[in-house]
Image 1: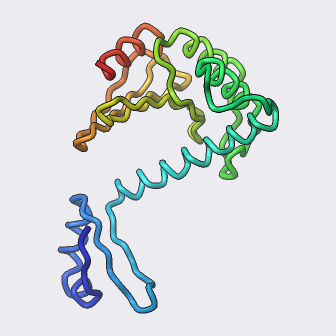
Image 2: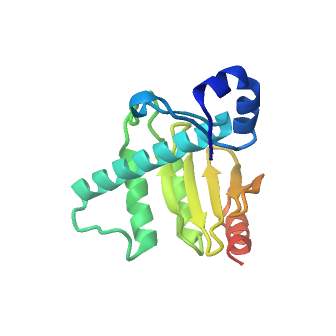
Length: 186
């Protein structure tokens, strides 16, 4: 994090924009603690995605608590994921308040079948894009997301603890995902 005076930013705006683009967070202190932060679009998008995922998780958790008050955060993770997918199945159009469409029963069935065959259970989240995201975190503090959609391929996105990122498409079947997940945890 870099702290810069407002007048320095004004006279060297390109420099500070370039720093933000390269991953530096630039904080500009202002009177009455009305501070401003400059970050890259990538960082902004990551923050927004984390915000959405948290909101979706809270929505699912709240709905699960209403429909199954005895469910606690997972002792039996596979069962919990299946129940979560039932809640996702019940979501109506505009479930996120931003026009997201409801999920088809056939698609939720596809994901449930997939989840039932996974050797390591993920965190499961709906996305506004009509996909379901499976998330995994390993002991090295790497993070992996597998986005399942209607197509035959799934998109895998990995952020390593050191900041390296990797994106790849793999077949959206249990065998391929189990192989990829096993490698992620190895």
